[in-house]
Length: 549
Image 1 (cartoon, helix red, strand yellow):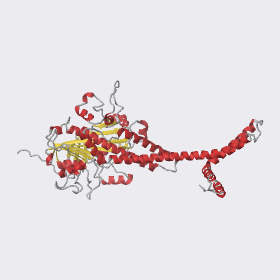
Image 2 (cartoon, rainbow, N blue to C red):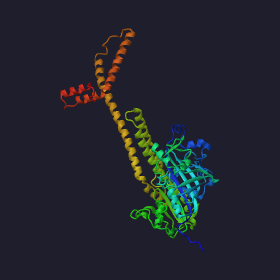
Image 3 (tube, rainbow, N blue to C red):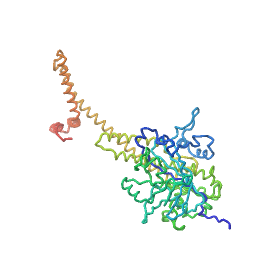
Image 4 (cartoon, one colour):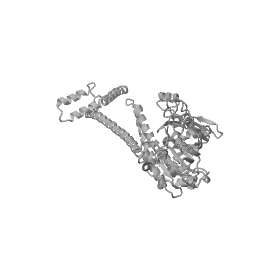
């Protein structure tokens, strides 16, 4: 019997998870290191993470055409962000110039997943596990790419929906974790289990939230991040992180199917919106009215035609997910060097990373503003000074972020530009940027206004002291400074009189400073032509009246 192609047969499946986290370095790490990645560098072989010497910074013989195609897809200022400035004539390399550092661990070879209790386990190859650090921005991004062959469409939909959750959303009446994988096991190259999930341990998650007011990261994801540890964990660690976005990790997916034309609209909706496998192919995950503009809003269908190098290729992007579906029989769609698979793993991954890095950075700036306000005590001068330093530093970092990392256009290639705009639009990057910019600007304006107010108060006080000191200066000057004829007196007597006058003058100056605000009000009253003599005398009395401020 000949093989009959079915739309539910996924010949090759790739999923790339991207988890943005906010770094919370300890004071010790700040004191010893120029960047958070230096902590991992200093650990050497004690850390499972080793810095990647990639095709752009290492041996030029490893640089292939797919890397060249990736590089030229982006505009020059984006190239400088992604790859650094490169080698200059007469220099040895470019290790120190790139704004981005990548670390990789190679001990995790595969992951064994069980979607629902009782389901058969599915084993995926772990293509790579990377950490992305960024210069001057306290954000780290975990990237895990997995792949498998010969899956059903339902299996692929469940993997997209359930894999990549930092912790369970809840539990059902039987105690089974909801919406996440029933079981996750990281496997070494020899098949041994390195770590497994603990999503079914409900009490551990409940008690952690009750104690820390923060979610508990599932054990298998906590294992991947080590030696980085959750900021709310009791484990020691020089680098600590906090969740900065929703607990579902942004995801990318590549599916090569026997016949993508046979996928129903419901199938595309479930893939594009990452809703998981449905009970029935004929059932929509949401109301029809809500999905009426699905194609216009989420789909990039430039290549959804029976023509070109990769016919019937569809891209679906909702910001949180970027999914590409195509024909497994198309050589270009499956090509790992020049085709759609290569583009998915290079150009498309980087545009996805840029969009989510920008969002995570903006959320980090917003969090830092809130924390600065929470820690300020207006009755404590050191606290106010720390608050001002924090806001000024935040403003400076935001300016550097704007000029170094904030891009509206990353490419002139139509496909890359269109997908980038879809990501940015659905993530709401422009409104978020405007909101954070206005908040930081408002805070900085407040600090400027407060500084001007303090300077004005100082000028008023000095003016009052000068004005009242002028009375004594003119009086003594008129008398020729000879009220006491002590020029011929012994030195000890002259020193005694000097001390008495010095103490009296100092006390009078300080007393005038203390009363400068009330004296300023008295001067205003004297210069007010509308006040009667009685009103001016009342203003003079208020200078010494207790509680008149």
